[in-house]
Length: 277
Ligand code: MF3
Ligand code: CO
Ligand code: CO
Image 1 (cartoon, rainbow, N blue to C red):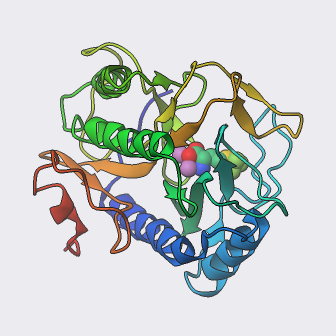
Image 2: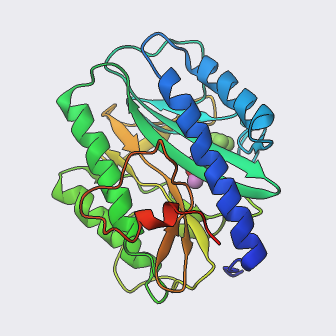
Image 3: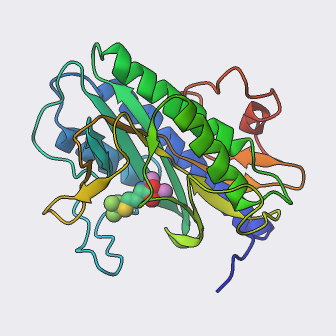
């Protein structure tokens, strides 16, 4: 078992897939409003993915071992749902926070990204959680360069989250991604610097921290997918797919509509928005 860096063809494929995934979230964003059902967002996502992007939805019928096939095209995780929420007919309510997580397959390559959305007027506590989680993801992204360790990413995210008195979910993590949805390595959002795998140019993986206002413990619902916080506290998650470059990191799931990186992120990272050669 090993981490296989992408060659130039793989990198091109991953850039295209990442752009598609981000474009899908850009398309969905204006529909995330009070009164819309998550099933409606799912339907819009499936339609845009197939008819506009010329891609397919990776979650639909995805069945990793130990799981029943996932029934929808996207994941929508509301409030105390941590991840893998299954779209349903309940309308979003004013004040909800929702993570929309999309993964598309374009020409055989996977692009995976998620964002938090505030539905109407969310509480300041909910807004702070979403902002700090976004910043935690970016702190993790800034660790990525050849020679860095996977443990550096987890450590940075955990330290930053705990400084803000949030807990980090342990059971779910980022992952290598490519022709398969979930590849090696696991990208933990906690840990120790200088541990685990050393990053090399061409590696592609996701960084997707889940932060809770309350305790870190989670449980899976009887639907076999939806994960919630055990204490029912609010949870947030953001996700980007990244590429290790010769000099640092390229974020593959940026798009015109994605929130701009936090102020502590230097200019050179958003520059990866530029069209690659
Ligand atoms: N998109 C999720 C991730 O970031 C995985 C969802 S699996 C599904 O890894 F089957 F629930 F869609
Ligand atoms: Co992912
Ligand atoms: Co995802």
